[in-house]
Length: 205
Image 1 (spheres, rainbow, N blue to C red):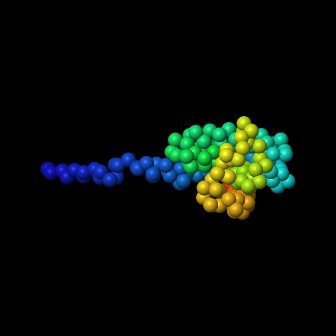
Image 2 (tube, helix red, strand yellow):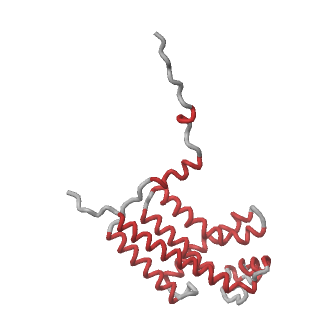
Image 3 (tube, rainbow, N blue to C red):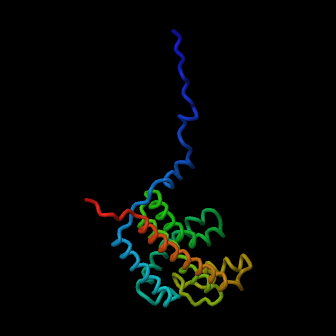
């Protein structure tokens, strides 16, 4: 008796590619959000956004100064890290550094489908936009104190705007950056509330 044997399909047995593996969590369900978690996170978001509204310079309130100091650590780290790729990217590296860390945090929580952690990471990312906007708007004014008491030669955005021929548009670009920050923070707050509404909150016995 001849028995026909089905050959294995090499395509079916092939491991998914790197890109497919990276995006695999997109099909996984988000973790549910409790009302307590939403309430506490919303209170923190509201408080910080209130402070940012009344203190656009981001330095008069203790909570904002603390956030600025945290962001500044990653900003300063970004200069030597990105400076390996050239002078201009090294200057820009401070801004890239303070955006990269919250971006890594939010991606890590996204891959775990941790709703609350992802929301906090996104909020932190866009809060940095407001911090960066303050620096941008100072390109001509030069009122901000720089680390080590350095002068205009060490002002990242003054140097970048001069290099790109945008020095006269510093405040306009800062305003756009600040607006994007506000949009991002408000959006993620709404998204978190939506995820709470989508969570299964039925009592379990």
